[in-house]
Length: 148
Ligand SMILES: CC(C)(COP(=O)(O)OP(=O)(O)OC[C@H]1O[C@@H](n2cnc3c(N)ncnc32)[C@H](O)[C@@H]1OP(=O)(O)O)[C@@H](O)C(=O)NCCC(=O)NCCS
Image (cartoon, rainbow, N blue to C red):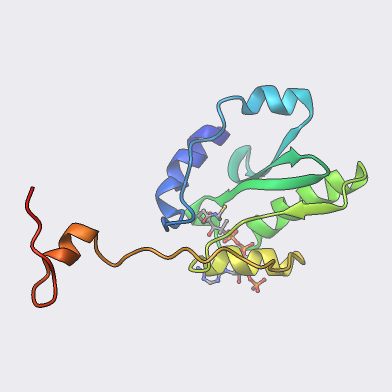
């Protein structure tokens, strides 16, 4: 399986929150890998890609674009292995700072990152209204009537 195919397969499993969601792979990923400012690491079973991580350079820091594992291979350390590979490989080239994101609801992702030594920075707290303003305004006593 190719990286694009596996990414598409696992896309629905990425948490969809106000601050995080699945994006298509960068259109210029191959060019960035060829140019040296992105790298992809895969785990394979009998030649089939079962998990991967993609990291991209952001000045002196390397950022994890995404990590994903085929559902059939989860919970066996595949994510930690590919992510550890990305750290070791870039470390060998002098990189000392890595960044990664993750939604608080994504326990597997958080634990994967903690296992690798990532520490939480002061983080974004995304606040969203429970309903749109129009629904709120029309929601009964205290609400306003909206004419349009
Ligand atoms: C997140 C994801 C990559 C983890 O892959 P994985 O190969 O199952 O992860 P690992 O086996 O390396 O386990 C990582 C840690 O998460 C824990 N874990 C794995 N699945 C879990 C689950 N469903 N619930 C809670 N913890 C879980 C593991 O126990 C391990 O923690 P530990 O070392 O403290 O025991 C995988 O679930 C996935 O592809 N999800 C969809 C894509 C996604 O959300 N990617 C992350 C955002 S970029």
